[in-house]
Image 1 (tube, rainbow, N blue to C red):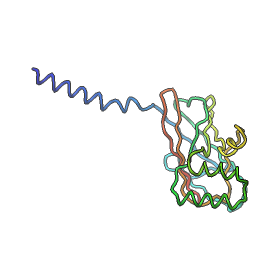
Image 2 (tube, helix red, strand yellow; image 1 turned 90 degrees about the horizontal axis):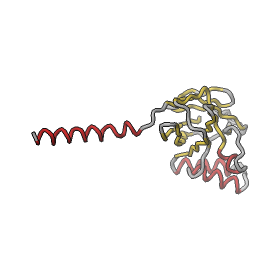
Image 3 (tube, rainbow, N blue to C red; image 1 turned 45 degrees about the horizontal axis):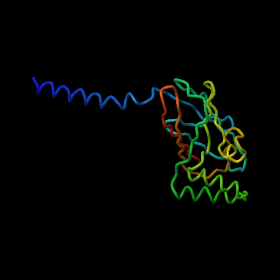
Image 4 (cartoon, one colour; image 1 turned 60 degrees about the vertical axis):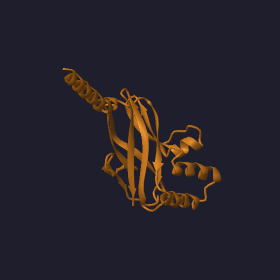
Length: 180
């Protein structure tokens, strides 16, 4: 009898331990499309998006297309930081340095390229979701403008990571953008 109770206790403990990670994960679904200057990009949040540049120095607006969250995200500004390798960082810094920007602009974009400052924010207000440009937000003390992308942005695969929150807790989100 004692052996049966000990075995039963071990099984109950194992089942409880196995169930903990499932219970700790928030119950959430977040989906969106992505558009550049109202042209919807091919791809998805899970697979990533493809952006073919036009080769001009124009600034293009990046917007969400039909974003949904179930349950709604908690209102707030959710930072997304770039996660890239040293070669991509060097390529991006060379790109921005060639623009002849003032040092304050270069310092900010370097922090974004290094992943220590957000490239963009996902703003959640009452179930409405928008993208806010992290560069403008940082340089101009909280000024919110739509995320902007240069039409001659260097080719590469860019991965941005952030953490979103809803009533069930926090969850990590990754956004991939393949620029050609």
